[in-house]
Amino acid sequence: MMTLERNGYMPFGTFGKLIIGDFSCLTVERPWADNQPLVSCIPEGLYEINWYDAPRFSNLGNVLAITGNTVSLYPNNIQPRSGILIHPGNTMKDVEGCIAVGDSYGCINEWPAIYNSVLTFNKLLSILKNSNFNGGQILITHAQKQGIA
Image 1: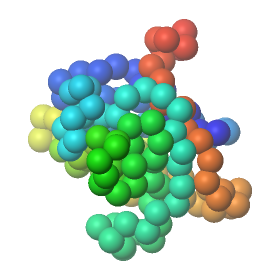
Image 2 (image 1 turned 180 degrees about the vertical axis):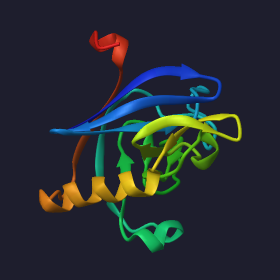
Image 3 (image 1 turned 90 degrees about the vertical axis):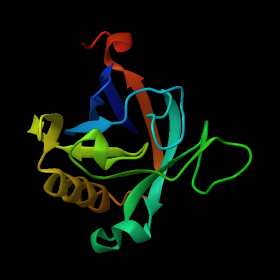
């Protein structure tokens, strides 16, 4: 199972750490905004995660899609959120409710950021492919609730 431990919800992004076995990387998401589509990170909870061939990221091959709880892969009348992916990105401006990965913190044009996103994303995909990942679960939580802060 994957775990995303969010470190804090701030107006300039929600930052955290994605953990899969011995591998971990940093994450950036939108701030919490009551689960509003395109402007909020998704709620904490347990979700399904699977490979997804996203046309927007066709140059990368597959990305990872999160579903379950309040999230579906495609828009519907039941779940308020759809198309939540894990993909490369550096600041909250690069995600519309999705999760971007990187390996270090910094700033880009005065925005808090994570760096080396494409490299980190490719490393994540390689680890998953080498472990024959064929879908699973991701637990999204807040580090302080786990006593990790």
